[in-house]
Image (cartoon, rainbow, N blue to C red):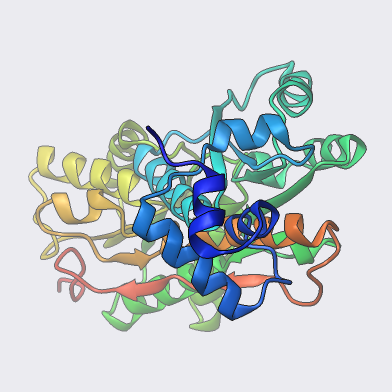
Length: 342
């Protein structure tokens, strides 16, 4: 027979209500009581039935992860990070992919909140950076935490995890400049992502700070995809005066740019330096391996989930005040960047 919460209570010498408070990690439980109950849980190998708990309680223990991102590695890291924190804190995870261009997205999210009993949502770009979505969530009175690329213009920073894309892009560009590069191409990701504008801003600021003019002909629009990197690099490298280095907005774009350079017989990094962003597996699966910025997506996701659960337990979306949680991707120098050729 399976072990019940009543068995745990008898074994620990406490009430069923106390066991429930310990399992739900309520802050008012004394450490001695917590240790006694958790020892009984371990000895009896008790497995709480999360589905039953959700049905029996007026409080939900389900967190929703809503996303639309073409980068599979990013999505997997975010899922794993949120799931890890949910398991640690006694919550379930509902994964809900959406289409960023869907005309009825607001209705879809409204239905999710009303019919799935989610306690709160973790939002990632581009949804986390769209004002109309945030307004709809506020009207639904649902708690949420969003991962964003900048806190510029935000008034609700208490429930944001901010990634300093601009600062990291500045460091990457400065690295190329230090290697002697003056003509540095920039391959953008999708404009619906705030990260695209922030990374481009960091690139441009580094150039200006080093007295290098920003040439619009070297900045190309694109998407966060391998094919976008291939096409963008071909365009840049076909110019009469091509760049000596290419800064791609993520590693997938950079891998595509590297592929295009190979097709054109261009040696990396002897004739052309290529750098990416995020330090995804793409950056280590290419040859040569890509110089990039390490963005700890799984840790970012864990932090977002932890912040949301803290707010849910406090019972108030404004429970966390002050500065947002911040992450600064760090430069990782590998073999794809080198001194400018004579």
